Image (cartoon, rainbow, N blue to C red; front, side, top):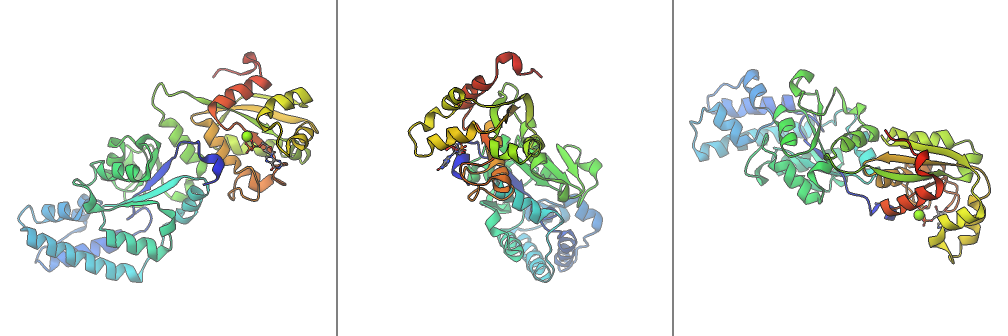
Length: 371
Ligand code: IDP
Ligand code: MG
């Protein structure tokens, strides 16, 4: 994570695995049918629909109608999992949009965890098979928690392992029990209709037919909606700097911030004069680049804007990227438009306190609209 993101509140996406990252439903069905058949028990598609997404012990007790010893339960689970791994090794594909979304998440300093009802061995097998182990900072597997979904324990453990507040987490699920677990855990939930039709997943905050429809904008909007009543809206000062204005990039840069869900509440063009430049960059007085910085910021008219939204300071800085465009993450404004460490196209306040101060330098209270 770039240095200049460290003040932001960490956010996370918690992924269910089966039916979200990989499509293994048919494989699961076949291996359950195989394992129950060894016990002389029939396992139908209707049975499967009813138990999908639940833990092995829950599934086995339901299908065996409670009539099963601990030993037999272990046997059935083992038969099923061995058969499943065998099948999966030969047929592993990520679902549409998964790899692109994982990349977006990683590039924007958002954390990821897998919280799956599956055994750890299956999770490892899938992540390694797809080459995406590095995308996840935590894994929670079925037996790690005392209750499976719809209990929220698995998702809450994932959040704890990542060090992220539940309200800053988005769960991605395909199962009804999983959606309920996310909501009970106080998290936002995206449901993808890989396994169930949209009408069964209505408790999710957003239902999509493919993860190709999810990008940074959707993630940001969900996290904003997750603010508790009483949480304050943040404001940040954004400047489109001279180098970008000279290249007609004003609109493109403002659009990037709007796309992330931030709202413009004040906007103007101005030619920064020396006194304003000195006030704005007072903290850099005496630094070797100070004189050049003043000359640069006063060299051409700029756009000044106030953006508003939950965590506006952090969100804007994530979208802008590190001070030095060469070190900024791909897809950030500075990486895409910046010329060098000074001519880095955009300014964003670095803390809510500094944002207040900087906004007051550029705008009067009357110039900021109330929404
Ligand atoms: P920030 O804009 O990412 O918050 P600061 O360290 O606050 O970065 O620096 C303010 C501005 O000063 C930068 O955006 C950049 O335009 C300029 N600047 C920072 N460091 C250097 C440097 O080492 N050489 C030249 N200009 C610099
Ligand atoms: Mg700064």
